[in-house]
Length: 410
Image (cartoon, rainbow, N blue to C red):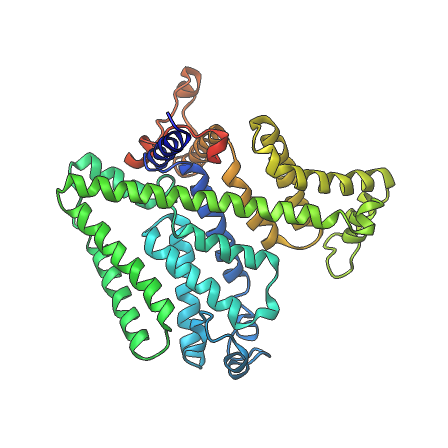
């Protein structure tokens, strides 16, 4: 058998495997919750001073942003001036972030959330940093994943439809789809959307219509075809997300190596004692008072960041470095006052978290939530070891095998 034939067969097997199921459902669910939670927290945190940051009272005024802004960038805040429209769009961004966080109408809500992130970042780019850039990149990739297979209201609705034997009429979905289409047509006709954005949003809108039509009909063949396409798109986006995270760590680690302060092991000392970044001066001073500890943290940061992409080849090594990286980002968020950047990185790191750990975490959170709502279990039940039954996974998630480390599950 020729080498070309072997290559073709291997490619076919790889495509069949990628189209068989949407892998890493728990990892993408944590990524969805993390990104939407960070964005929602950002919007609510800056609600009191929103008008001075990106609103009508901002120093970087609406006219200046419209004059100096990129004509190809999506910025819905520049469509109309005035406070009324700004408040409407701000509330829409909050609602979209909350919907993605809960996993309600995730396909539509995730697109609206991305458009909100782009609009607020382009409205005043002087307020953004690397964490904001990574947020909008990962949120864009999230649109193409099936991130609501578990731990979402969409999964619960799909489970109820499966138990009922047939899907119910989705009036809410039809209304959202109609409103989205009307908005695209209106914005395109009035010149507020350029052609590339009209095509992009139009394709997503038509894909949603096709998906709803296939689900509403009894065409098993077309449903199977759409499922395989959705699996391919999901898994492709998952690979891109993992690659993006690896690029972030590889660039961060390798760019540190030529720095003189990283070579002599003092970089962490200077980073933790920056006056405008230090949130807890006493704690930072205590950590940097030991030269040995500073040296270990400086060299350890470089080693962990450079080694992480290579550690993905070994599950145990990846899990160890993942814990160290999450601890590093928590330290950055607490000590250097960069909570949004740290939370985005922790959410991105969750793509590589072990599935077993995430399932245990979900069960623990579910038990804790039921105890808060229903109260503690009776003594007799506790003695008997009675366990509250867990929610059954969604029909889509039930077909997903436990991903190996190469599938970002670990």
